[in-house]
Structure formats: structure tokens, C-alpha cells
Image 1 (cartoon, rainbow, N blue to C red):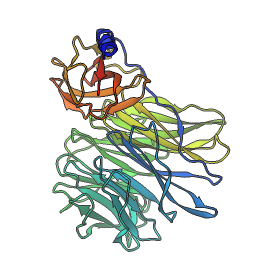
Image 2 (image 1 turned 30 degrees about the vertical axis):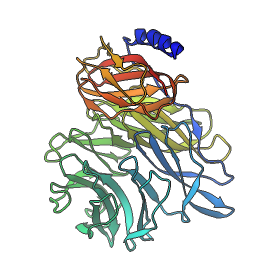
Image 3 (image 1 turned 90 degrees about the vertical axis):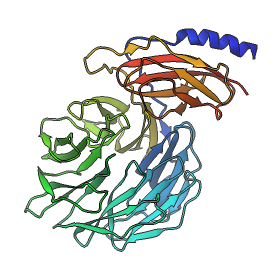
Length: 453
């Protein structure tokens, strides 16, 4: 115990830093290892839990939907298990640390659903949500209501669950269209739903939007955003701003609404990614696969100014082998990526994560991030809970805890303002840890912490 007390005295003297935030990228992890090609299908994250589904062989000549999870923010992964003995398109969503939701369905099959109530350890049996229904979008709102948007008989329908997937309300009809393509749905923090899709009712493929202001009970008339040749994507951030992303003649387009979808402004000169999601702090996060000559690489794009501009970083640098099909998920301040990579000689699924506070970020005034003048932790050493004295910090604040090996062990939820947040450290082993506090208003501080048992 004497050594631990000396160590914390040294570490707490290093708590404040200035300048820009350094990049924090995890190692690239190979998740699959079979002779057959593997295809990433979905990723979901909540807190330190990450859930990945992919298509692969589960026995020679037999392909299905496989599943693996990590409970320590991607450091270690469970044994790969067979989730479904089919190769239908599927996606996955986590609504909290325990409840994980899996949807399967293609244009020629039923729309099926299963859930896990123990963080992915066990799964329920299949539940059919629609006969010959094609799943196209899923979302969840602040009350953990689940929404699935799907196509059936050339029409758009939505189903809702108010009890984390245990029971489902009857399907609601949205609109009948011609030659429906991809669609997506997003729920904001004010019980509004936002749906987008593409179809050829007007003779050419265009992207359309409609919304509900009463949690899906009724829907307003749709509006058209223009021609579309890609996959429309709709996002709702934590400040109830709404975004529609699509492509016209392979040029990105972004529609923005600051009033929950009531009015819109369309930007045709943006540099948006191919697919994006919104984080808890209102930032947008996207990923795409880029090709240049013989090189392919996976990139991460992040916007801090409502999709007006995007910072781009390499997730997987080019090495002369192909890489594609990237998908991402965001939990607290960590962004998780999976993609298909041909580096092993055949297609395999790989994973990597990073902090949203990656290198080269300045605040909105263009100035480097400032150091927090004061941060202290007490009690120290601690056994169960610590308090951070972060008075004077403004904006949305997050806390990350790293062990002595530099591995991310804990991420707090975003907090409005600094104050004196509490951290539960009861699950951490005995040792010395580094605590990093960051704010989207430009503050960062670090401090040492000792946990004893």
C-alpha cells in the first residue's frame, strides 16, 4: 500500500496538459479466421460492450450469421457463435448494457427479430414481425422505444416496441410507392420519428422524407429532396438536429434541419461520408472505403459543425490489398469500426476503435484546446467510488480511465458541465490508472488514480 500512495502523488502532479489532443487508436484486431470469405453485417455498442455480427461458414459449405462480443471496449473478444443458420441481411442494435436486438430479413424472406436480455450471452427464439418483409432501418429513442422500418407489398411500414422488444405494436402503414429502394429511420429526443427512402414513383430515382411528431402514431406528408443514386441515411443528434445524407450523380448531398424536421436547408457542396451516425455530444461520425489506383483503405470522418465540414482519418491505411464494407458504432466517446479486409489472403472481418477526440482538433474558434486548470480525485486510494472535482468546466464532459498498459477500461456517460462527477471503480482491479476528463468546449485534464482491494 505504501508504494501505491507514492505513485499517486507523482501521477496527480501531471494532471493538466495544454495543446491539442493526441490520437488514441486501438490496435487492429482480426475477428474471423476461416477459409471462406467473411462479410461484416453490423456493429452495436453501449458503454464498454461491443457487439458484432457477420456472415461466415459455421461448418464446411454451411454459411450463417455469426456473433461475437467484447465487454472491455474491444480489447478482448468472445468465442464466435452461430446466431442464425441463414445468410439473410441482418443488423444489430444495443439499447443499454443488457438489451441487444437482432433483425433479419431480405426482399424474399420474412422480417424476423430476436433479443438478448443479458448483454449477448443468450438469445431469445425468433419472432416474425412481418411475412415477406424487408427490413431497411432500425432506431431507438430516449425512452428505449424500438422502431423498425420495412418494405412490404411496395409499401413502407413501421413497427414499434415500448418494452425493449418483448412485445410489438401492430404495423403502421406509411406510404405506397413504386420500386422502393433503401430506406432508413431515426428517432430524436422529442418523440419525433424521421424516415427516408428512395423510389422511382416520379420516373427517376429520388430521395424522400417524412416525419412523425407523436412517436409514430401519425405521419405528415412526405417531401422530396431530389435525385438519388445511393443509399439515403437519416440522423438525429442529441440536440434534435436532423440530417438526411444521400448521393446524386455520386456527389454527396446533405439536408439539415435545426427544428426537428420542420424546415430544411440543403447543401450540395458538402464532403460527407458514405454512411454516418450521431454521437451523444451532437457530433456526427461517418466511415467509408476509398480507392486510389491499386490502394484501398478505410477512413473515419467526423463533423463538429453540423455536417458542414468533415475531418478525415485513416482507420486502416493502404497496403496494396483490398478493404471495403466499413460499418461503425459510437458509445460515449469511443468510435468502433468493423470492415472486410483481404490482407490475410481472403476476406476476413477486422475491428478497430478510437476516441472521438482524435489528433488535430481545435475548438470552433480555431484555437487549440485549453488545459483545465484544476482536476483532483478523492478519495485516493479508493475501493468503490471516487469523486472528480471538475468545477469550472463547461459543456458536455466525458471521463475515460486507462490502465497502466494504456488500455481503455472505463468510459463515463456524457455529463452537462463539470461539477463533481462520481465514478464507480468497484470493477477495476488493484493498480494505478490514468483518468482523462475532456469537454467539447475545449478543456482537457489528466490525473492519476489508485484503486486498492
